[in-house]
Amino acid sequence: MLINTYLHFNGQCADAFKFYEQCLGGKTAFTMTYGESPMAGMVPENWRGKVMHTRLAVGDQVLMGADACPDRFEKPQGFSVTINLKEAAAAERIFAALASGGTVGMPIQETFWAVRFGMLTDKFGIPWMINCEKTPA
Image (cartoon, rainbow, N blue to C red; front, top):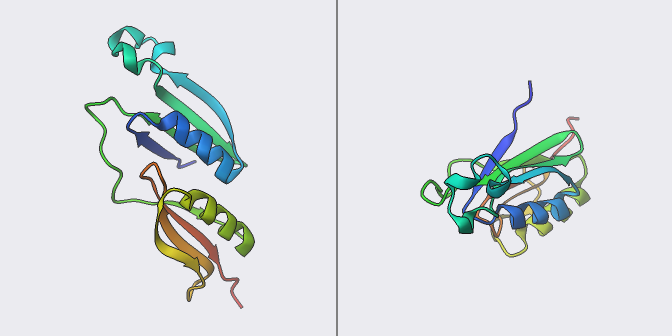
């Protein structure tokens, strides 16, 4: 079983996933716009270039997303996308990249459970937690 995160955007999905490719070192494996789909005739002309579905592969992990229809978008809340890393330097690098243009909720730092941990909301409104746990003694 795989459990994947599916992010919804208010028209900025393509830009967000280009940003995530850069920040996470992944590769967009698939993208379909509303205009490329069988739904093309059911969406407004100005929405046909928006993303109906996209999938970003980062190693053996997947992050997916889409632009929610304009009347159905809800601001993300009640969750965080969490990235667990084994190296503190990688945690700091990814945290800094995702925080660019966003808001830091908790600067990346050592905690009682982690060598590095931080929380942020990226420039697209998606909440993230970056975690690099301490190795048990």
